[in-house]
Length: 620
Image (cartoon, rainbow, N blue to C red; front, side, top):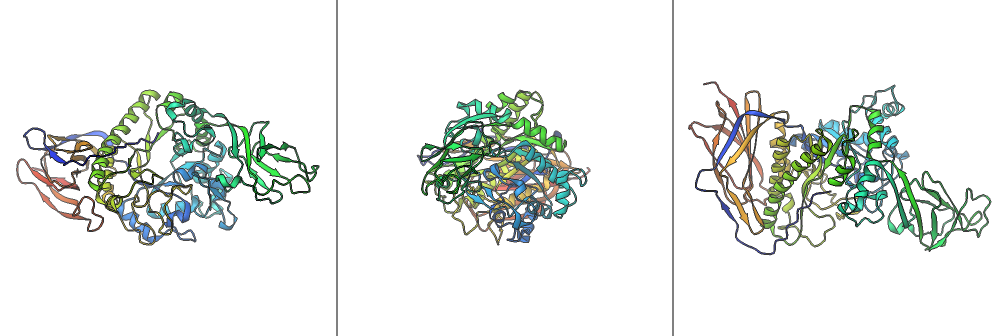
């Protein structure tokens, strides 16, 4: 389940920076590697396909060069496609080939119709120009393991080994894309993304472990009085008949077990094998049990549902395949890929146990922001949330290892500090808090924990901001709130402070992690709780050692002694510099040379800052 941290601050109290004891704060860096290496995949972003991928591609499907340059500067290493909630019902094979021949998409939220302008090939053109990799989310809600396996073949099979690979070559890309990471669905543990698994989406996963078992191994679900909508538009209002002859409708979650009940304004109509012999007043329909397609009469052969009537269906959905079926089909297409479960939490782990099909797991460790909080209170809430979420991910790793009996990669395919989607009462403190330095400190804290924990990939939500011409709702387009993105919207694609943090930390990719600890570190105490001011990450490559220090206190500098391995005294320092913790403008990276001549070097780390010190080992 998406981990939620909610702190409602109702008392405004003075915050303080409190030191433990009277000793000097000390940062200690060990000389021996921990065995972890900073994965290149940590510096990724969740991305979404609608609206020309949020304007990241031109209307003609070409990557926007301004975004490519900004992403390269920040070191963006991985993009997720086709997104999160919007990916749940995405039909990939409708989004390839000539654009004029492509089919419709249906948003995974309220089911609004979307176009297929940005398909896998357009997405990969953006990825390749950035010099990045990708992770892809397959449709678990309305597709099949075979459809997912065909997608793997389209992306990864060599020409001549699969008709899908040959089709990819016809579309202009003979070489396989080589997509390694795949996810089966997006957040199926969340009620409104349960789809065929749950009749009542308000039931929490912990209250209904049967849903986790269905996700793991498949099954059936009975639905009563479900809207009978169309293939492209599955919003509730689409169940209303427009009175036209020959209406074609879609049962939401095919296949359909025998003996369904299709109703028009509550009256049950009769299923027939063909409309050819029906009279004009016969209240009949045809239904393809495999595809879920329903056809009504044209007024000559079969009656037309009256205009304004409500079309519904009661039926048993299934049998559906489960995660393990997707894994086996997809890995048969390419044994070298990793296929991740996206069902988070203990119920899935209990259901899957030590099944050898369990290949990798997804986590979405968000810190959610809820009213009422001002900017300073929000900062403290978010910093505490970063610690909670880092610990949560570590617990997830341990629980997966314990349950599965082996190491299973944990992919963080979405994370960030964000207002709850659709939570209308929250207003951004200061107007621009989410684009300020404070969320950038959150990202730096998370990346340090992910690097130390051996996370293979982490994708900040999201790459590009909500288009300026959209009001930013949380419907099927899943646009969410503004200002949570790494870059502003088209055409500027201006870097946020978070982009600057990624620019500072992405060069650490490939470096081995060293143990680093903060001794006697100060803690910021606020009305909501307390947290350590300093977070560190130490890495090494060759003769270079980099110490990253995040000072999360919003107003106080921290001086610390540095205990470093022998020989590291000189190098360069870079600091994310800003006037205030909630600054949006006047934020930059300041660089300088660095020399430690004292036996016990010290360094002052400014308030609300990220500092990287890269030291070269010098022989005595």
